[in-house]
Length: 507
Ligand code: GDP
Ligand code: MG
Image: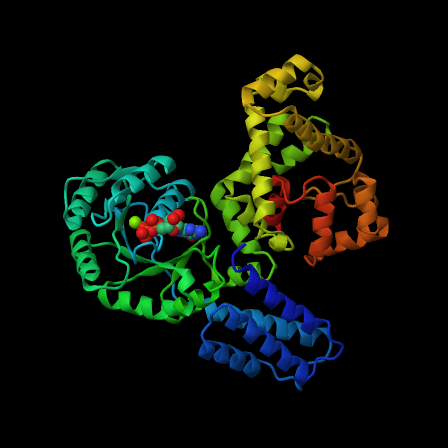
């Protein structure tokens, strides 16, 4: 999880504040101090922290706000709003257009993550936005740059242009555009070289390439580990090239990320994406509001809905529910659900968008992802008959052996898959005679309670607890911890079944 430490500290400050019996000036002051300390530890500039505290104070007049829950809520919302403002550059970024030839140029210091991020962006526009993407290597400074990018492009299956024998990067860039345009690309990303520090040779090279390709957008890539110093670095690049937007990398590994984000926001450059790992799918769209909610563990329903929309997942939930009710759920249906989950991106990043799951930690998401991948692999080794029929074939040892051999996975994975399938079928039998509300929820809480395994029902406080829970679901005030407990109890610990996600869109 990105900025875990900052998120934890801020959440802790807020929950300490909310648990106070009386919200008076002193409690309010403590909250502001706690928030200030948390931001300072994340390397946020002291003056910016001062401004944030001043803004919160200016928005809250304790005497005028009604005491009790309303006061708590108002203060909390104001804090969240101001944290969002701290990270919000308040400017919209350029976006490519399908019906034209779009050129993007990357700039930044060596090691900032340009080449990796070019690849991530190429993958993003190819898979999620359906562009035909090409990437040009205009880095002749670093040995190995050509091969690195060529291999990256092969991995994410986008076109590549490079020229090992040419020493002028501006010339390669120009050639690249021509070749890739002819090859049908409508988005070309030009990777450039960097230097260890801001020096004139780098800036000259950057402007030469800029002149040669005349980019629609210049993206400045910056390593977030420099914290608040990002402000000066961003300014220096701004002075030389027309920086349109910024991508901050390595937010996964550094406590100083908060400082970098706020510093870049202060330069009024839109931050479009953040890098959250070395893998090519570990890049997230940046939206200050959603980001703040996520690090505070409140999820990001808007972001999740957008992902689901982009993944272009067929909404066949009604159909699926009918199948479950009729006891006709097949392994093929489950396979489709698993594929849907993976289409949304790394499970880890999806969990962070679901309220209450944000604090589960990266390991949890990674493990769920591996589990889903194992299920998919083992199902790939099944015949159509096996995927579409019932699970009786799992009793036939020779068949199980064949499937395991084909997938290279141990029999325990089959057992695990079966263990996941069975409760769904059981639940389906019970669902059969229930009246369902649109969206698939039984209208009678007792019906829903009867579907849950006894130990889970006990955990959430029996049928009475169930009733409360359903009310909360309906008002959108679901207790995140309980939801987590329930999911875990149902054997879906952090799995985030497709069905759950679909429900979010309806709300
Ligand atoms: P360039 O010199 O600017 O092209 O930087 P590279 O793309 O070659 O990246 C330098 C190093 O940073 C590589 O080891 C990358 O794997 C790593 N890197 C890039 N982005 C991220 C990120 O978001 N998170 C992490 N953890 N590592 C990253
Ligand atoms: Mg590079």
